[in-house]
Every structure is written in structure tokens, then in C-alpha cells.
Length: 138
Image (cartoon, rainbow, N blue to C red; front, side, top):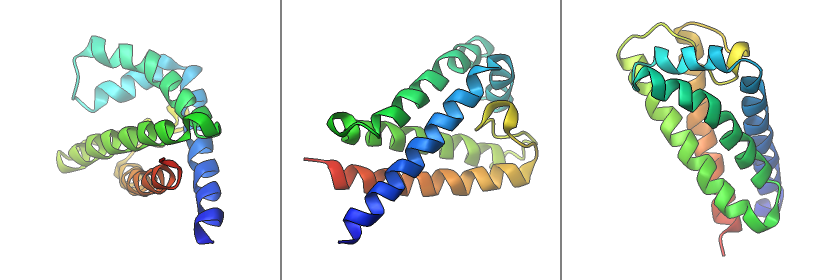
């Protein structure tokens, strides 16, 4: 019974999060590229390439969560993105980088508080994506 109530709530919430995150980054990929490169994990050109492709991947993941036929695969993609983002945030916190997460493009707030909030959001998102996958896997 709880599965029938909780799964749609989580699915719509995660889908909205990915759609919002992807769409908000499309307007200013240059700002998103700067946010990616502030993590100091990738070469500059890879960060720029990621800034132009990741928003579309996020939008497709969010949309996929709304389509029954591809829902389980989209949940795996969401879990993968949340896990990667969690690790990127964690290394930024450990290294003491004073950057904004870049989660929502130009709408992201700077500072460590933002990174900690994004880390918690990524962990919760990973748990939600796992729940969605398990509820929809054949």
C-alpha cells in the first residue's frame, strides 16, 4: 500500500527536480561551465562540454521518470547522476572549496552552506531514485 503512495510522490518530485535543474542550466551554459570547473575535477574543455550536455541528460532523465516504459532506466540514470554529484560535492567539502553547487545554474547560491545542503539533497535523491527503481524494476 505504501509503495503505491510513496513511489509516485518520489517519482514526480525527482522528475521535477531534474527537469528544473536541466532547464535552469540551458539559459546560461557559460555560468554552469564555470561552476563545473570550480570543482577542479576535469580539464577546462571537458567542463565546458559537460555544461552543454548534462542539462539535456537531466531533462531526459526527468522526462523518462514520467514515462512508464522507460521509468526503471530513468531511475537508474537518476541514481547515477545523484551518486556522481554526491561524490563531487563531498570532495569539494573535504578540500574546503568555497564554491556554489551549480545545481540549478545561475539560481545556485554560493558558499559552503549551499554545498552541504546540496550534499544532503543528493543523498536523499539517491535514496529516492533507488526506491523508484525498485518499485518499477521487472
